[in-house]
Image (cartoon, rainbow, N blue to C red; front, side, top):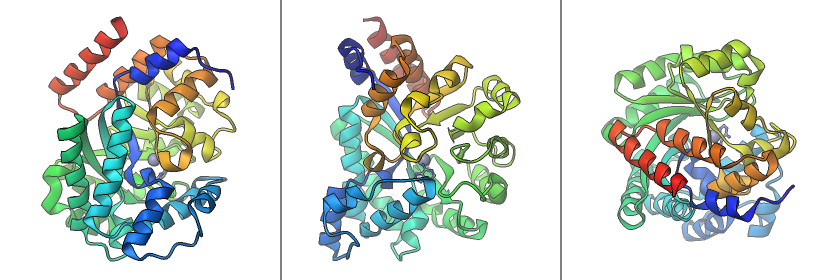
Length: 340
Ligand code: ADE
Ligand code: ZN
């Protein structure tokens, strides 16, 4: 891989940015997995941190999900969710991520007998501490696991009722192919009726029809990944016309073999087509890096420049669920930084 100009690298690292696609369970580093396993008396299938990390050689999305759900098995108590999320916020702050919209997967925990309240209390306390001590603002997006049925998703939405003022929206993740968006039409309608925003993973491994499905059946405001959209020119035209943000995750796409190498990634084409693309880390503990690592490696591999960086940072705040007033304040920070 070609080295990045040090001045551009430093510019990228300092750039104010928002992260819109981070699964908080995917920020669980192997060291913390082992520490929580010990604290909670959970037996792991791996003898050491090194052995666990060595298992992070994925061939596709499913091969990752199997190990990701196993890693999450150490999360039992509110303080575990707090410690995981606060560790993420510290890394976000170090990367000049000023605002983050966190996915969480309640079914991964409630199906193991962890109370919904433990998940929420831990995440909420970490958010409050991050705002107070790091100045990082955040929102929570509750994802439904698409390999499970819609009844289970509806039950999860019911469990979320006491916390609806603290959850900005719903998302859809887990095994994409074979689980099209239409399967979740009713639960997304119910969530929207409750005032929640909607996003969905689509076009990570799945076909462009799943992106159409997410827009038409689920009425989502953002598409998570969406890198398969370029196969369908009519879809690209629609995404541009409707200014639907795509939360692209370059290092994830390489680790899960969506692209063979970063130099083959289509982010530049997405931007050139006028799509509202953003850079995100997805599951940074598993995919080789947090936000700045994604920026630096992608810019080096694709030969992107400062103009691309500014557009990506602006897209990240524009595509967020912040109020219009707060978006404008963050966009002004981006402008100041880029014009300094
Ligand atoms: N859950 C965590 N990471 C995911 C991804 N990249 N795609 C689908 N579901 C996920
Ligand atoms: Zn994801």
